Image (tube, rainbow, N blue to C red):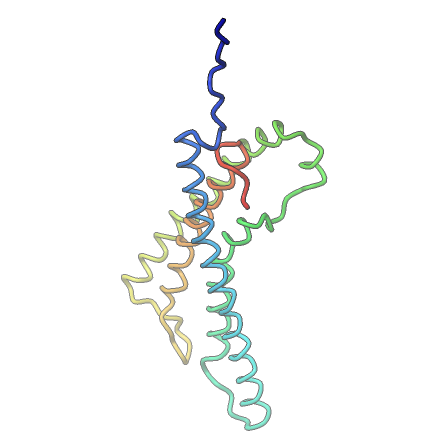
Length: 184
């Protein structure tokens, strides 16, 4: 007598599509982890610039012309580029009081619906921010202040941030709908 063999139930994570999705998610996580850590440390530069300005101004009566703008621009770039890092760790604002009441399938459906709005947002960051950055670069735009630094590097951070957010949003969605395993 022969036993009927059951079809091999291959775990979902070993299917080629799931492996590809898992690899994509891990790569995006690494990029955003690295970006978040590097730009997170840039806040030390901001702190140094503020401390330098306070000491120079109060102790020596020698205010700088570069400190205030440096603080604003480095902080702005850090804020923009660390957004995907925050998304990686689910630290953006979400109405958990309502979201947590749903089951896993309802959450996945809700994630798909809200992803449309997310796409509109990051699409605007990439498209409009990209146009602004390109125009600024072509004009060699500066701030027009006494220090007068170039402003296009800060504007380039807008579409880059949008792209990083988009990639992390896709990675998170792939996990939430079950095409990739949860983040370790």
